[in-house]
Image (cartoon, rainbow, N blue to C red; front, top):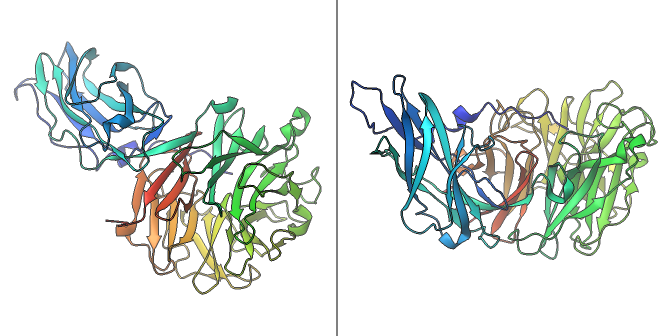
Length: 515
């Protein structure tokens, strides 16, 4: 449950990405025109129309009149396999690569060798941004990279060359699992991800049919399934639909979390059901759907193909005096002793929010709630440490950093971790933590001033330190900021995350991490 992020980050994201040296086409005593390239970290996604893999800025100084952009020279050298690209276009835009693109100046399908494009685009005095955007084939490999270079622009009959045709680096290829408009839905939000016992990836999310806003609304829980580590995804399934009567706010259900029980292969989804206005602000004391939000669970015993009718566990975990009790979105875990754990959150009788956990020692038949970690904490994720203790990593409304605590009794008592409110930057957003391959992995916007700079960090000492050299920036753009981690096979880390009403998926190789 979160306000939307600010998009005022573009100048910070691009600060280190812009090639600062330029070559002017005019003499020192006449108004100059200059060009520079920029390559913020923006993965290119299968199914996505706009993939801003390389930007360039043309600056026309005051006094220069009648200036026209007449041609563009570029190539896609550095791309792993040019056959991954179906077509490309050059679009007008803004410094922020997440902004909606403007007019298409040129487009084509042949991406081999040097490409020369004729255009006719007036350039008034000031700054003008353009983006090179390829459209990928469905068969483009998620293990490949995309790169582009700008060799020059023709202005006033002269070729203007940037100092750096392509800044260092290239763009990852990912899959846009869900885009606005897919299956008639306006928005997709709140991702969760898990790898099943059979090796499939199951992604869960809100299907927000009418708008991107939170419950109460017409929202169902959707599921996407991949059997090839995220390269392709099956048609969306609806795992939870609590009704569609407008009198009851469409009985929206959302904010899902997912976990896999390795003992029997059962996959669990936890979510919040709002019968009318019974979400964050409208929920009150009590236990019934007419009084308070409901924590419901659904499960699958066939690797995510079909899902059971939801079971309501509100009475098992909620104190009637609380105003709301439900899961933390993302993913839960199965501990080494078989205990199933979802992060959770509640609003106390006085309205204050608290992070906690729910757990089951009988494979999901019954559930118990822990106590609150700290007031003003909400969405959380959990990981089991090497010593068998449980770590909780919480969004903290105070902002700036994460709340981190541990428990040895499934949340009956909590101990602040040495890194509590110190180690992990946070702009007040959901984040994801995963214990895997002897390390802890953490994904979130690595910022305190907005939801941008999506980053995975790794700790090899049980969360005591998170070295900067082990941090991988995977998308510098701003977005809604939620993400979730899961293994994608044995050699890759899978990430599902939000753009703007989108569900994006990347897989990152763990060999040579941080190099």
